[in-house]
Image (cartoon, rainbow, N blue to C red; front, side, top):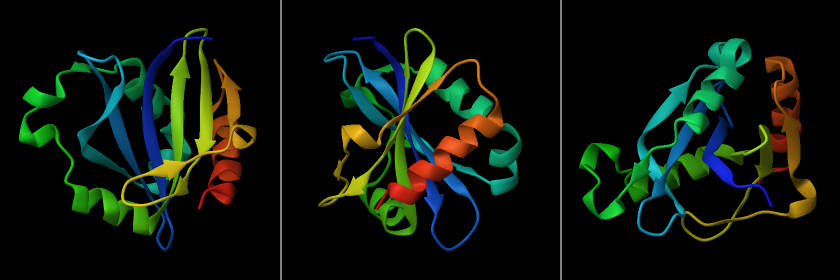
Length: 145
């Protein structure tokens, strides 16, 4: 199994055009990934033009953090997460060693919990074009709930 380098959640607004990106940092104590604010709002035009580069930049520069010492500016309020969940379809994007992305549709559970199905995951080998990335994203958002 390849090692995950970085991960994020990407949400597509249900009613309007646009996206939000929730970056994760690697917990220096456990090695797991933890949500990291602030949430990045991405206009649809920017995603269409440079979405892959923007997401890859966040994934390749995944910070190591201590969640207990995280400044409040880097924490995301539970209310904000729940609002995002209500108004967006969400996919998880993980960058793995060997330079490939795993793009997985998420299905809402209770609170900020999600489930996913392994057979719905899509892989994108890098390097790739922004159009190839967007094509997989469209499919993943269609399956997300």
